[in-house]
Amino acid sequence: MKIDLLSPSSFSAGHPFEQYRWLRDNAPVHWHAELDGPGFWAVTRHRDVHAVDRDHGAFSSEPTIMIQDPLAGQEAQFGNYKMMLMMDPPQHTAYRKLIRAEFAHGPADALAPRLRELATEIVDRVIERGACDFVQDVAGEMPSFVIAELMGLPRDDGRELYKLTEIIHTSPEALPEGAGLSAVAKMFEYGQGVIKEKRARPANDLATKLLEAEVDGKRLDDIEFLLFFLLLVDAGGDTTRNLLSGGLIALLENPSELAWLKADMPQRLAPAREELLRWCTPVVYMRRTARHDTEIAGQPIKQGQKVVMYFGAANRDADKFAEPDCLRLSRAPNEHIAFGNGPHVCLGQHIARIEIDALLREVLERLEGLALAGAPEWLPSNFISGPKHLPVRFRPAKRRSR
Ligand code: HEM
Image (cartoon, rainbow, N blue to C red; front, side, top):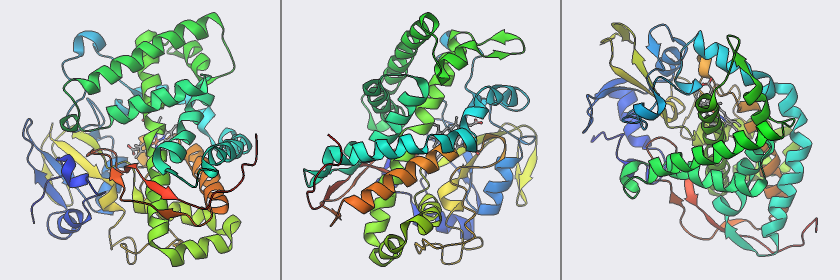
């Protein structure tokens, strides 16, 4: 079996599940070559991914969680600065604490009524047309609104930031030269504007809270704020969108499962959403770096080597999930690892679940006769998996709000 987990073409129709299966069965901790780098260990079994993600003593998130560092060469601009996602405890713990409360169950639940209204508006905007690009017109709208809402930004700006996120998550090979860095630069330029605006007019939002936050008695400086801003915009954008769009494809391809869900949506949405998270696994991987010589499942790992956890492979591991390649919306328990685990476990997971439930319910209840109207086009990325365009049709109907 030819193993290539780097080329975006391996991800051009979703996760490379055949490669994952071969790896789990034959080389669960596999040495993968890199054209422009030293190579890395690809970890594909659920129990190993789970263990590596929790063991920050052996596996560091520094210097980066990408296989190749997207900010390499930018040291002049960023010096020793890094995002929370790329920190280890105890530094990571101190930064995560700054915004942990906003993402806890209570505040996330409090967003639910507002997110249901948003879902109604999003569906209203397409329902009379009878056809749309589900990714761009429906699924992408939700996370871009949510980030704007949390940060206290105009909604249309949320949409622009989300477009930049999509570029940042596309593999550089699939982009014009320099496009990724230019998207990061634009994001920072926008963030500078947010700093000015929120310092002049503080408000009850996450951006203001971050500007007023202190670590070790010191306020975040502009670069620290910008890296937080980039992380929040990036992490919550196309992940949720891809779950919604990839999830819709899975539902339409499994009509009996869809019928089961629709028969009792209030009761069945929660297990269904967890199975869609397992099925789609929007984040392909997170990288760690061995702090010292160690081993994974008996495979010796040398200090400094890159170790890459493949969440989509772990989520199809037959040792963990019965019939892993069957979509079973009623699956319970469902210990998928789509949000990671350990100290970096997705901070936005409660909000993501509320976004997914609000939009899926609205779409499935209101867009009658929903069907694929063409082949999906997938994001050419080895980091984030999901469709970029998804033509769908449905019976035109009336809007609910004006
Ligand atoms: C379906 C949607 C989502 C998926 C699949 C997802 C997945 C992930 C994964 C796999 C990680 C890394 C976990 C690890 O290393 O163990 C992560 C981290 C993170 N996610 Fe999410 N995420 C989603 C939505 C969101 C949303 C909506 C937000 C915020 C609004 C968000 C904010 C974050 C943040 C801030 C981190 C970094 C946490 C840290 O370093 O401590 N995510 N997410």
